[in-house]
Length: 353
Image (cartoon, rainbow, N blue to C red):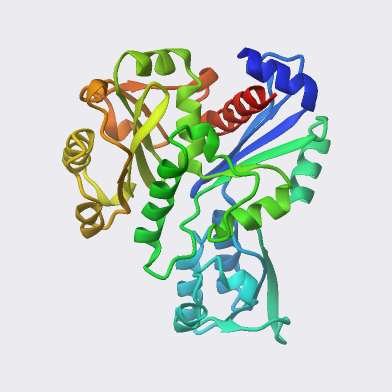
């Protein structure tokens, strides 16, 4: 096991790491004194997917719904639209409505009514990316210790007037300008515009990061990946259920980020994007014109070469079979983000000690 992780767990006690994606939430309980292969781990439906399932159940029962709680992943938006199209009502508190959109007029335009109290005849449905009660109960029933710290990741588009896609790339650009070391991209104090991560941190009480960051850190936690990046520039690609995120890395430092929606790109299109991205010739506007989020680049680094060596992760990585080396950090690809959170945070604590 990585020495900084060993020392960190010895001092901190059990750490719960949760990586919340659009399809699944992947968690592991890192325990001092155990090898990583013996750490308990879970791959469960994402909170947004469970909310969508509950809304569809209530649609079949012809019941109105009231959403309360806080901001979370908005992957249940289609279920909301189907519910309203069926002639049923959905109401939401202002805080809960942020899961659908940061602007109240957009939420109301969907047909959602804002209500701070549950209207008569509505079934309440609580929104949250992370429920301390759920995880405490699951671990207790599994005979496992409660965590002394929780590290969590979720994708956050941020609250931006210029729209989600442009706003998302502004977040990446700000991170690159602040520090190109991805370990620094785990937040103790969450910037105000990252509304989903702020809500997540309020629930976990611990550091949080974007899922793109957590998986990138998971890839770099593999010694061969980090070592290769010190010889030449490399490309790391995470083909997620909802988004594909690629990063150019040289000497452990991120030099560029690309992000698109996985379902919107064919294999030839992804390969063409990556080819241009590696050359830093792919402008954000071109990616956005095809429905993606864009690109963000740090200073050009000629000595990095062409970033040809490629390492691939993600639940839909089979799309890129034969285009690089598949990674399974610590033997478990689905836990790459959770391992990445732990590895990145432990290294950061060791450097600050």
